[in-house]
Length: 357
Ligand code: OGA
Ligand code: NI
Image 1 (cartoon, rainbow, N blue to C red):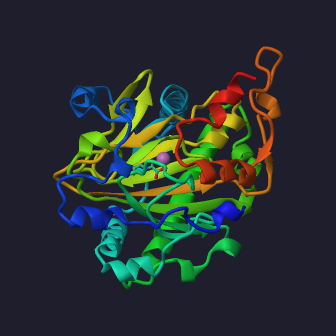
Image 2: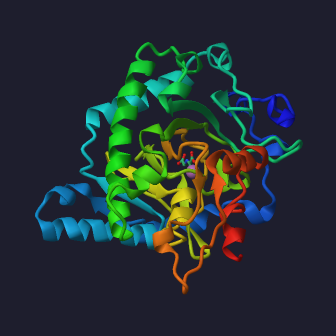
């Protein structure tokens, strides 16, 4: 754990680099040619976007409800990603949470670096993931905070400015937990399990949850770098609120990167690695990345719903058959996450190779 006490190099917020007005990005943000985004080739692929699902259907008559559950299930198998509309979260709250977090990133630099994080918990203001010395970095800053379990929540690690940021984040977190609860029920039933199966398997009322506010400043050479390198999300599921004016998120589908165009007031939901493990790869946690641009900054809020940290997680017994043996060994979420915290975003290096076992 020693290497997690501090960063291997001084952390430079990307926002400071962006605001310096330099026309060239520092070399440590320049990706090898094979990893760079080819910006032109993605524009025409927006058309075949991730599925959009109207959650209003869950409250309708039985046929409507079944069709909606089927749509979610298909999206979890085929894409690992979907957007939801009619999700019950107030649009006013969605706008307010984006506004307070934008406000945070607009504070003077000293007000933000007062919350500078370390690789031990990542809580606070940061600019990198992974502790490998000399690593090529991503063009993005973030604020990471723990929302659940209650025992791990520490307001001293949440920003105190803008003035309403804590209250708004609390309120938003409650809505996110509700939404994740509904989606977990739908996924459990669609997998042929009890409605409460996933909720219980991931720790019941002791589940974890974190918020990561991502801020991607303008980048003078967006074709050379990435806002966030390819990765899959390690936890249960992620609910992302992204700017519908500035695109940036791309999802891997087959060999291609598909740009996501968020609908107004929609959430983007993606399956995390632990649902892939528990469902014995029926549902997929899919790689995604973020591209940046020269004209506009971008803000996104990723709410991560995570398992209780010390439970042993493996494929559900109900989903293991002689034809479909367990594809993953059991591991606690703490063990799993530690690998990522050391290595940084590296595609699906953790769940993918296990599949071959
Ligand atoms: C993440 C993530 C996507 C985005 O924070 O894990 O994938 O659009 N964010 O910022
Ligand atoms: Ni992600």
